[in-house]
Image (cartoon, rainbow, N blue to C red; front, side, top):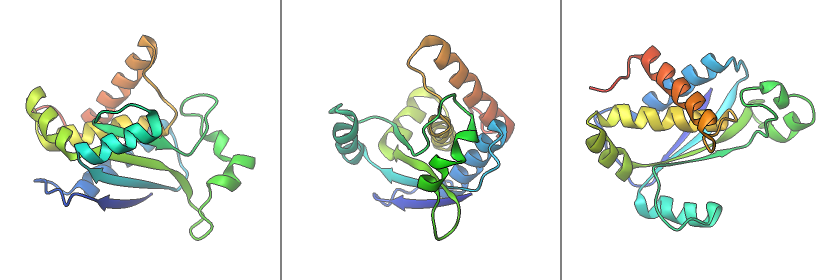
Length: 167
C-alpha cells in the first residue's frame, strides 16, 4: 500500500499522521480481505479547504470532518473482484501497477474539535476518520440505518484491533 500525503495546512499533531493513516488503512484492507496493492491519496486541510471541496463535489456549502472519493465502483461493499477485468485497466497506475484506490480528505480543525467534544485523543479521532473513510473507499455507506450499523461495527473492530481506543 502506498500513501501520498499532502498536508495543506502544515498541521502538527502529537502523532505522525502518515504513520497512523497507513496503519489504519492496512488494517481496514486486511479485515476486508483486500490483497491488492493500492495507492491512496490523503490530504489534510482545514474547515475552509474542506468546505470548498464539499461545495464543489457534494453541493453542500459547509465544512465536514472527512471526505472520501473512491475510485472503485462496487456492486457489493467489500467485493474487490470488481477491481479485475475492465475496471482494472482504469484503476491501474501504469508506473507502479498498483490500484489507485481513492482519495481521503481530513479536516484538521474537526479532528481537534471532535476529539475534545468526544473526550478522546486527536490520534483516536484521526484514526477513526481514516477508518471511516477507508470503509467508504471499500464501498460501504451509512445512508440507511442498517448500513450505518455495519460501518460502525467495522470501524470499532479496526480501532480495537489496533488498540486505538477512547482514552
